[in-house]
Length: 87
Image (spheres, one colour):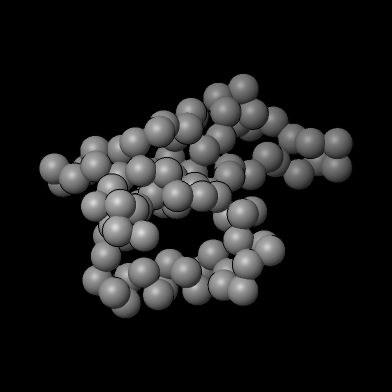
């Protein structure tokens, strides 16, 4: 599992001569039976490679919201494009 920090959301990521495609973000797992962390653990158990991308806009770095808390990046999950074709 590899983690990247980005200021934009790419459609695909090339890493180790493989292409990874966007699968979903952490918030999309709220309505499913599996949590984001459980999905990552299950995917790693199948010995498949995944990439987590933390996305935070450059404008929001170092800024705080109305309650004084710093803005948090959104986490996106990317899976191997070959696995995406199979499912």
